[in-house]
Amino acid sequence: MLTIGKLAQAANVSPDSLRYYEREGLLAPAGQTGSGYRLYDAEAVRRVRFIKHAQACGFTLAEIRELLHLRQADGACCNDVRQRAVEKKLQLAVKIRVMQEMSVALDSLI
Image (cartoon, rainbow, N blue to C red; front, side, top):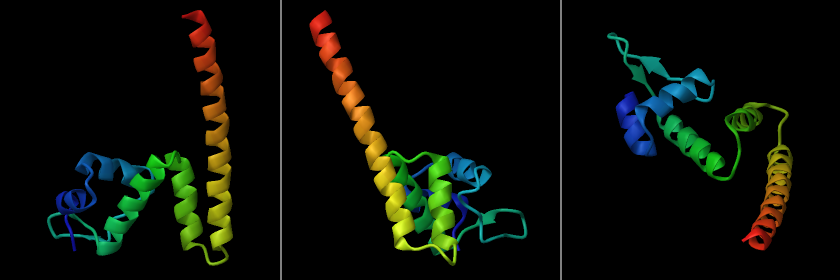
Protein backbone atom coordinates (compact mmCIF):
# COMPACT_ATOMS: atom_id res chain seq x y z
CA MET A 1 0.00 0.00 0.00
CA LEU A 2 1.17 3.50 -0.86
CA THR A 3 0.61 6.81 0.88
CA ILE A 4 -0.46 9.77 -1.22
CA GLY A 5 3.13 11.03 -1.30
CA LYS A 6 4.51 7.70 -2.51
CA LEU A 7 1.76 7.41 -5.13
CA ALA A 8 2.50 10.94 -6.31
CA GLN A 9 6.18 10.05 -6.69
CA ALA A 10 5.45 6.78 -8.47
CA ALA A 11 3.02 8.42 -10.91
CA ASN A 12 5.08 11.62 -11.30
CA VAL A 13 2.28 13.97 -10.21
CA SER A 14 1.73 16.20 -7.19
CA PRO A 15 -0.26 15.09 -4.15
CA ASP A 16 -2.60 18.02 -4.87
CA SER A 17 -3.33 16.52 -8.31
CA LEU A 18 -4.23 13.22 -6.66
CA ARG A 19 -6.58 14.98 -4.23
CA TYR A 20 -8.17 16.78 -7.19
CA TYR A 21 -8.62 13.48 -9.05
CA GLU A 22 -10.34 12.12 -5.94
CA ARG A 23 -12.72 15.08 -5.80
CA GLU A 24 -13.46 14.58 -9.50
CA GLY A 25 -14.26 10.89 -8.96
CA LEU A 26 -11.31 9.60 -10.98
CA LEU A 27 -9.41 8.03 -8.11
CA ALA A 28 -10.28 6.53 -4.76
CA PRO A 29 -8.02 5.35 -1.96
CA ALA A 30 -8.07 1.64 -1.21
CA GLY A 31 -8.07 2.36 2.51
CA GLN A 32 -6.84 4.53 5.35
CA THR A 33 -4.40 4.22 8.19
CA GLY A 34 -5.60 4.53 11.76
CA SER A 35 -4.48 8.15 11.73
CA GLY A 36 -6.47 8.92 8.57
CA TYR A 37 -3.76 8.83 5.89
CA ARG A 38 -5.01 7.69 2.49
CA LEU A 39 -3.61 4.39 1.22
CA TYR A 40 -3.49 3.33 -2.42
CA ASP A 41 -2.76 0.02 -4.11
CA ALA A 42 -0.60 -0.67 -7.17
CA GLU A 43 -3.63 -0.27 -9.45
CA ALA A 44 -3.79 3.40 -8.43
CA VAL A 45 -0.38 4.00 -10.04
CA ARG A 46 -1.61 2.53 -13.34
CA ARG A 47 -4.85 4.50 -13.07
CA VAL A 48 -3.07 7.84 -12.51
CA ARG A 49 -0.67 7.15 -15.36
CA PHE A 50 -3.66 6.38 -17.58
CA ILE A 51 -5.30 9.66 -16.54
CA LYS A 52 -2.15 11.65 -17.35
CA HIS A 53 -1.72 9.87 -20.70
CA ALA A 54 -5.37 10.49 -21.63
CA GLN A 55 -4.98 14.17 -20.72
CA ALA A 56 -1.90 14.37 -22.94
CA CYS A 57 -4.03 12.92 -25.76
CA GLY A 58 -6.52 15.77 -25.34
CA PHE A 59 -9.23 14.08 -23.29
CA THR A 60 -10.98 16.20 -20.67
CA LEU A 61 -11.39 14.90 -17.13
CA ALA A 62 -15.09 14.28 -17.82
CA GLU A 63 -14.17 12.19 -20.87
CA ILE A 64 -11.53 10.34 -18.86
CA ARG A 65 -14.14 9.58 -16.21
CA GLU A 66 -16.31 8.03 -18.95
CA LEU A 67 -13.36 5.96 -20.20
CA LEU A 68 -12.66 4.71 -16.69
CA HIS A 69 -16.34 3.80 -16.22
CA LEU A 70 -16.31 1.95 -19.54
CA ARG A 71 -13.25 0.05 -18.38
CA GLN A 72 -15.13 -1.14 -15.29
CA ALA A 73 -18.48 -1.79 -16.98
CA ASP A 74 -19.38 -5.41 -17.59
CA GLY A 75 -20.97 -4.82 -20.99
CA ALA A 76 -18.28 -2.48 -22.31
CA CYS A 77 -15.82 -3.63 -24.91
CA CYS A 78 -12.71 -2.34 -26.66
CA ASN A 79 -14.90 -0.93 -29.44
CA ASP A 80 -16.53 1.46 -26.96
CA VAL A 81 -13.15 2.88 -25.95
CA ARG A 82 -11.97 2.87 -29.57
CA GLN A 83 -15.04 4.85 -30.63
CA ARG A 84 -14.28 7.51 -28.00
CA ALA A 85 -10.68 7.72 -29.25
CA VAL A 86 -11.84 8.06 -32.88
CA GLU A 87 -14.24 10.85 -31.87
CA LYS A 88 -11.44 12.67 -30.03
CA LYS A 89 -9.13 12.35 -33.05
CA LEU A 90 -11.82 13.84 -35.30
CA GLN A 91 -12.31 16.73 -32.86
CA LEU A 92 -8.56 17.38 -32.86
CA ALA A 93 -8.46 17.31 -36.66
CA VAL A 94 -11.11 20.04 -36.76
CA LYS A 95 -9.15 22.14 -34.24
CA ILE A 96 -5.97 21.70 -36.26
CA ARG A 97 -7.71 22.79 -39.46
CA VAL A 98 -9.16 25.88 -37.74
CA MET A 99 -5.77 26.79 -36.28
CA GLN A 100 -4.10 26.38 -39.68
CA GLU A 101 -6.70 28.74 -41.17
CA MET A 102 -6.01 31.22 -38.38
CA SER A 103 -2.29 30.96 -39.10
CA VAL A 104 -2.85 31.70 -42.79
CA ALA A 105 -5.02 34.70 -41.85
CA LEU A 106 -2.29 35.96 -39.52
CA ASP A 107 0.31 35.50 -42.26
CA SER A 108 -1.68 37.74 -44.57
CA LEU A 109 -2.08 40.30 -41.78
CA ILE A 110 1.65 40.31 -41.10
